[in-house]
Image 1 (cartoon, one colour):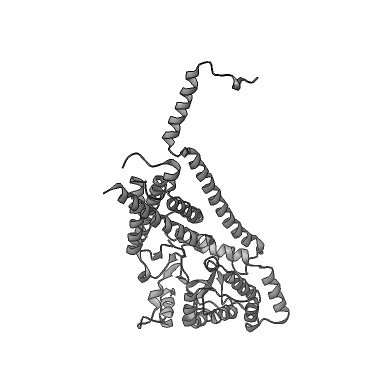
Image 2 (cartoon, rainbow over the protein chains, first blue to last red):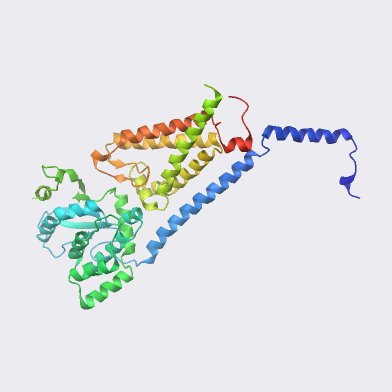
Length: 269
Length: 158
């Protein structure tokens, strides 16, 4: 016979215990322990948050490690790409840094208005042009066209055709932000830039290997650290040029003459 | 004010603050870099720390929002929501005072924008209103149709 089946020595004790249990239950009113519920909620919330953050981090890390670790000629990891490098630089010529994302509509507007002027001054050696190709719009637009077009442009740079490729990407920017470019389009920009034969085979391999993915990710990170929070951002000798200061008197369009003026003013005599 | 009216105010405060938090969190989830850049654009915290906050913030908003909509641990969630809004207001106000031109990135997006596109007064007014919802629940967490009532029973006073 087990202990439990034995009647209580003092009949009063059982009633006391029952009364206590009832009192506790009444206090809780629903009978649910607040601490237990709080613990369950906290555990679920922490698991959800940690899982979410880790998943986000992992997708970002995957993106970096998938590609190569190559750095384009003439620059270092995370820094901008010098353009018009064939030009003989005029003494005292300032450095113009251009921070752009190929998918950014404001960058296209800027390029359409100012691209020709920048190219002219760049090839004349009157300004040292450096492009920082940002890729942050991929995240916001939920696609990968900034990265793919960036890699395409840098693979074209390997063939000495960065500028025409860069210009072709902007010329063919989709009307709707976020539509991006197909692989065939990106390849046609390379062909249009004059890359053919063996050079085109090299370009294909470069793109397939995502050769400059790591570099572009580093550029995005570094420009963020350097306080670039919008595209396009222009820096002349390290100092931001207000885009508003380049707008024509009508207040609607860019005035290339104003950019030329700013560059001339920054040239040390 | 009768306790019935206060209960209804409590329910509205929960649904408004909770609903806005869930929405704000949901539109940022899945866009971690955008969220990180938005926090970094406030230019207050070190770059790396701001990045981590950008990763965690959307999830925190969703958790608080769900607690509020369910009416579970309403006092805690209301207080946390109110404090979060006070932090947002401080961040926006310092950006405004320092002459930065940024979008708060409250509902996705964020980063620098043209000076004439900034909406600092509207953003601050909205967040102050939400902070008041949270403050009400902090002061009087009891409300209609809350899990708190179902699980822990109605409070004795008010």
